[in-house]
Length: 600
Image (cartoon, rainbow, N blue to C red):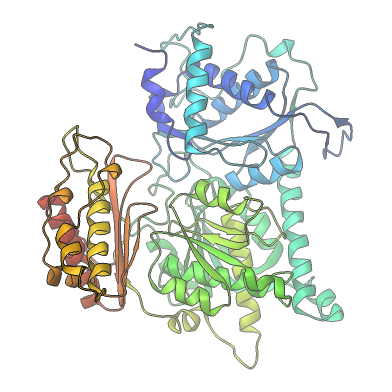
């Protein structure tokens, strides 16, 4: 069996993540070697050490490393730090931090960083995220790292004593010491003080708000306002995640009244997974909002890169509406908001967002751009040198402000503060004073299902996947609809001869049902009415006049994800029925599962 074959499944679309038993000491050692090769291959650039105790400029490659609150994360971070230092890299240890804080600190040096985290996953899952030159790795780069790891392993054997040297989940294990720690040069492995890691980050955010006050007020008023705390009652649920290590210092810096829930980091997650999008996971926050008559509730996931909010009535705000509000803030508070250059701006949203969003974004004077699902895909598009993206967000709660005020990264705490600042201004507007619930009420009603996971149907080995079959089928139907608008005499023969190009199949032996499907034109127009928009950049998305639906393959599990939305419950049911009809030729069980997905 190839080396680390069991660990191959850990290398996923966005990061390294999986069951803790696969994170053995030999695997972490080999992974550290692979990271060292990756970072040492980058061009060395001068960087100013911002440690107050050492202001020496260095041309050595620098990597910042932190970890979340999971049992085993700190030990993995220590081992990776030691391995990288042995390879001549300078390592800045950040301690317990959020993923966005790692990105912030990486930017203070050369953009290289690692955080040991499994984000919102269950307690028995471990994981690792990283940046190279401030950029998240692509799926192919993640696979390249795995191949680098296995290639290096063939030249270096790593003993794996599973009785005594496990780095995985275990109550008694806090750290693994390298036998070579004492040999490391003292300047290669540096531990930043906890207060410095937090304070530099908080001060950078404070500078953003000072400029925002100047942007929105006269110079005199701005100076007075900068010392004023937001007059909102805010409830924050940290879900025992990494944000609990800094949330109190950060939010009490800017807010007058803050109530914290579950703000002690605890890798056992006594109240459930640190995932604010799970059903009923925000019940405690909703109840606290009502109890304290609060203005807003905030919930962060385990590593602090996802945000969900609850309004002043204790009602969860849909991510679609939250994305729109944050995009509106990004546009109206953009440094160039009064210049013509912002007219070409774009807002990125992922394919699972509801049908109202593109229209609402267009009304803001920006161009809506649909994207594949995945925060790393989103970051890569934001960081493209030719982009005009001022804001990006996705249904799962990742939001990026790309207005040059702060790091272009999905930082949930920063996004929440931008929302609070804007909401405070709305509260203080004597001409249009509104609560958050009033603002949400003014937006179009969305009746939707959750982002629902469905079992992956089995297909013959020579066949395309179900999503590929459905994609071909929908292209075929779209072709028929387009052909039906033609009036020339050759139309009927063209329609009769219509077929799907075989080149879209993976295999010449493919037996896709779509290749043989015979659909009456009347039924075609029922399934895809005139004006329906088809998008296949990530699965199949159909936008109808009164709703939308999407069916795609998950990037993180062997399953399908589906979401449907309509202007009313009847619209929602009609759209689910349409998708069920489209899927029934390929898998009748899937069609019934789609019909059974409940509205939220």
